[in-house]
Length: 619
Image (cartoon, rainbow, N blue to C red):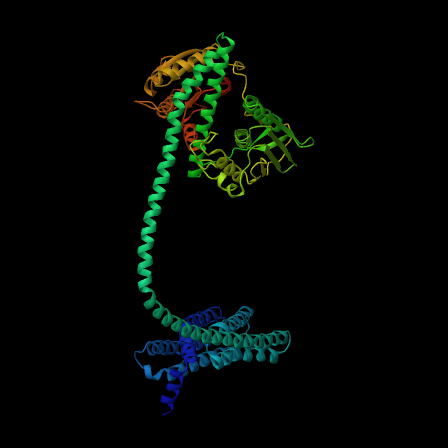
């Protein structure tokens, strides 16, 4: 039968079936727009014209209602429910309904275009244009129905305008041109939709094929995945254990360095106090040995802290303007005594035309150069060490050259690894724990630079460092890490100082150091006593230890700052005197309200600078 043949053809063509489904999904929008447009045209009609418009509206609504019923039946047929064997008939009836609706609009245009109301006339033209424009997309699934719909919407109205003559001829001609454009647009949209549907079907077939292949591959790989999963779990467990061990090691290193600073503070402090007394030449020489050994010990502790920061990813640079000449002078003064003691020369030279004022982390740059010089002095028996600094306005290049024993090519990379030394035997002739060069490499990478070595056994070694350390104008504020004269008094000192520390040796040494500058000291053994002492009398400054029983330094500082804010009393400068000086720890001190940090072991020069800082903070 014809209906059954049409149904079979429709069901057997996936693209046609998809077009019918798309037309069904778009039909609700078409129905709603036509209903709203018909009501709008009727409402704005003149009273004399309204009876005709109302009658026309009734017919339009009846047709739309019939189309709604057809649309519901089409949806049920597409879903395989009622009339599922009559989908082709329903699709044809839907197309017929669209054509009838378009014919009603064409009738309205032919019958009522010569309207007395310009508003009604132009409103009708706008509505017809909008219906035709929307049909190019909404009716793109219907190849011939859409074209007939657009033609009925626009051509009768345009011809009526042309026949009417006058100025309406131009408007009618534009309507015909617009109709042609809309027909082309509908044709292109239909072709694009068909291509998309075909591509979708092809992709669907391809996906189905891939899924079948994946299923087959999955069956083959399931056992392998199970074994891989088990192995991955083992590796994750091992990785987690390694991370825990690494964190524990870093925490242990930080704790050890902190605990070592406390007795070192006593050694270095007593040495500084002893240096102020009248001594014989041999005694002063012995004191110099103690001082040098203490500072070497402090450098080892700093290296341990640096490695701890490197492993935790918290090593950061502090960029400031600095004087290159001052930095070179620091390195020379720090390492020249060791070179002279070993009968070696130490020469530092700077390119004559090189800009002397730079911007970078002077402390880390000095540490890097110092570590390279110290390493060179360790492995040089005769001759000496030469440091050459060159560059331009953007870069600095530092070369440290020695006449030492040299390094084999196979060791050129391993020497930059942590805790690695070329000679690890029990009979090795040089000291150290294998951290200096590892820290140098990390600092160079943090600065965005490079550090390389050129060497061979018997011909010495050359370390080349290069990094972007730009020049700045000399008027910028400068910083310097140079060691000041230990006996140089600060410009201003606080008259009274409260020293808070649970260690009596630390309290005594710190008091003796500041009393040399004419400072009167008071004492507290913990944070609670510090708060009580602060309440009992005014203090020009407070030196606060961090780790104390009952109440630690942070809690005491917070208590003092809260009470200052509540009572409105003058702010007292509080300086943290501590061996815990990792960046995140210092940040915590500042957040608690402290004005600075004086690291242990305490150096007299740093102490003098801190006293001046206290007075500046109080000003």
